Every structure is written in C-alpha cells, then in structure tokens.
Length: 318
Image (cartoon, rainbow, N blue to C red; front, top):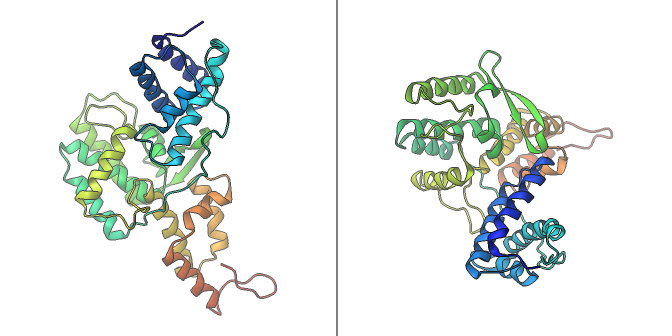
C-alpha cells in the first residue's frame, strides 16, 4: 500500500491532534513537520522513507548538526506514530544524526541597552504596536518570565489591585509573581491604551497585535531582532547575540548581583530565584548564572571578604 503525498498533511494533522490531546504543545514540531510535508510534496513522494527523512533533515538551511538532529527527531516521532497507520512508512533509527545538546551563550543586557530597546519600541508604528512591544520588553526585563509565558498571558492573568501576575509555565505549572508598583502601573497603562486604540478587540490576550490577536513567536522574534538593530546592539561574539530570551538571563544575573552587592546570602536568594523563574531543577537556574564575568567577580569578592556568610566550620559560602 503506497501513500500519495496528498495523504501526508492529514496524517500530520491527526498526529498533532492526538499528541496535543495528551498535553504536548508541539509548536516547534508542527513547524518542522509542515516543512517536511512541503519537502515531500515538492518531490512528489509516494511514501516516507528513511532516506526522505534524512534528506529533509540535512537540507538547507539546516546548517548545524544540532538543527539537523532536531529536524530528524521531529520526523522520527511522527513516523513512529504514522507507521501504525501505514506500514509502508519507514521509521528512522534513533541517533542516526546524533548531536550533543548545546546552549547559546547568553547576552547580558546593560540597563542602558534595555532603555535603548524600549526607546526603539516607542518609535514603532502604529501606536498600538509600539505600546505592545515596549510592554513586552519591559515586562520580561522586570520579571524574567519566558517569551512564551509573556505571549500566553491573558488580561485575567494580571490583578491590578493585588499587583500580581499569574504565569503558566512549562508543563502547565502555574506560579503567581508579585509585581513592583511601577510594573503594575505600566501594565495598567498599557491596558488603557489598547482599549483606546483598539476598543473592539475581543481577544483575551494581555499583549495583542494591531489586528487585535494574540502575539505569535513567528512575528515577535523577527520584530525584536529589528529592534536590537535600531537600538544599536551588536553581537558580543559569533555565539552571543542579543535575543529576547536573554532578558530572562539578564534578570537572573541582576538578581544574584544585587544579592552579592547588598550583602544578602546568595545561598538563600538562589532557591527563591529558581522558584520565581519556574524551574524544577537547580541546574536550570545555575545555567542562567554561569560564565558571567561580572557575577563571577562578585562571587570571588564575596569569598575574599571577611564578612562573607559562613557555613559551619567557618568556610565562606557563595
């Protein structure tokens, strides 16, 4: 039994539907699989073979081994499910394109650079777009929430009376963050402005586009890259470029720097920070704090200080 390429979109749609019913978001997988469908359609493929999967995974613009491995992994997960529907569909073996997981070096923004980004956002047109991107950048810088978490916020997530923000993180975990009065005031002002500029918007999202719809990552990240150019921000190195997510890194590093500089005990601050960021594993928070010269210098200075908090036995603790 062969499968015409026209059947592939339906199989992909069914696969995503089933997996999402089990609680998986699969936003990246959907993007990859839609491209795989287009790849197969252009070749008029009648089924899915291991060669098809590898050819797609290694085709431009998949330039790095990690990107190729991620693309093949998405196709492999799909074909494992689709093979049960059509035995002609071949499943690529595991680790066919292995790649060690890597993380991009974080770009730590200075206060001046964040201000420059906010100014660049203010210059956007129309006014609602400017207000939305200024609020997005300011909110992420002030709270350290993830980009996806910010986009997923609803108006109901913000309580202007108690100055709290209810954030739904990874795996559906919910946390409530107390907001600084200035942040709460900025969110309140944004809601008033969007009501004035787009009074007919019925979207429940907190941050909306000029069409009155929830923001989407496919539009947000390119827009942010343009803002970094307008703000005059340049890559620190070939592996360290300013990204929207790096506002979260900056928040984490700034929090720990404040702890060191104010004389607070970092060992007490760190688990609070981990909870605030929505991390379940300490190593996830440690990643946000490693390799930052300013933070490492502050830690070293704390160790050298005779007033450093000590553990039993008199050893300094950082």
